[in-house]
Image (tube, rainbow, N blue to C red; front, side, top):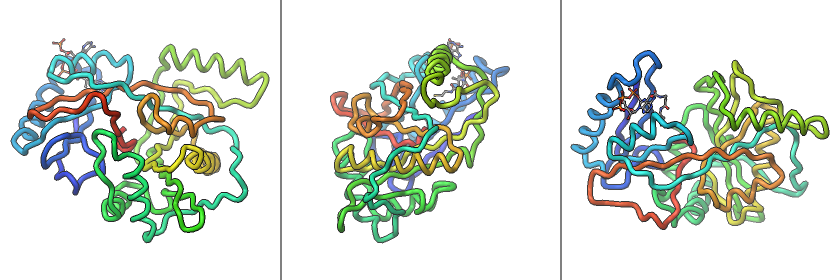
Length: 296
Ligand SMILES: CC(C)(COP(=O)(O)OP(=O)(O)OC[C@H]1O[C@@H](n2cnc3c(N)ncnc32)[C@H](O)[C@@H]1OP(=O)(O)O)[C@@H](O)C(=O)NCCC(=O)NCCS
């Protein structure tokens, strides 16, 4: 099975899988194990690429989790180039986090959208693949994202100024992720966590058969990581009440977002960003890239 989608840039998501004119190409690839290596994805993707090239798509990107050799081999044999490696920090939700008593945190209102768009642009404007936000684009993002509403987007305010905004999307409401097996890294972490839990409260281990309840942080904007940290702690406490077990986002490996996660247990998973270019438009490899968590 495979799903592909091409939308007009700007009408589609606030983020793109494309660098280039006019169109955004979004896709997911999954072939059931019995039919793998029979050319299923190659045939589907070729149609998708042909259509994209006709429509003026400049480039396509995709993210591959570390150690997914079949997917990386597939991409490399089909003209994708490894652009950079990002990180998906995962924070287990297992205890209440302290939030300053005087923090003015509230749900977004429609009239906040211009200020939030400005804050997002300030946070991400120098990043490749970032498409500037606007109040209208944010409104569309909120209305088209399943199980997402204004209540999912929080702001930290001081006087009339929005210091940070943080959205969270509970993707377990639209898809079920069941753990089939654990890789060596997760098994090692499980061992460490079980040992540490003798001395202090720790998150429960992940086991095969578990149905994961997770949230993805999006959008993220902040004037300083310390402000974002306050919102993140608040979201952790909401997640705890909602029975969510993990919080995720995606960013550059040294991004300031990571500073806001001090005090959390954080497990980093690397994601390789692969890009295929159809036209003579390239990305500047020296610039950091922006990936919206919704693309995960
Ligand atoms: C990655 C995936 C989509 C490939 O689908 P597929 O239909 O088997 O791929 P195709 O038959 O079109 O292409 C085969 C090519 O893929 C790569 N490939 C597929 N399985 C591989 C494996 N087990 N080891 C190494 N390379 C592999 C090779 O490049 C292979 O070409 P080759 O046979 O000439 O060496 C499939 O393995 C899958 O569904 N994996 C699980 C989901 C996933 O990881 N998706 C990617 C997320 S980014």
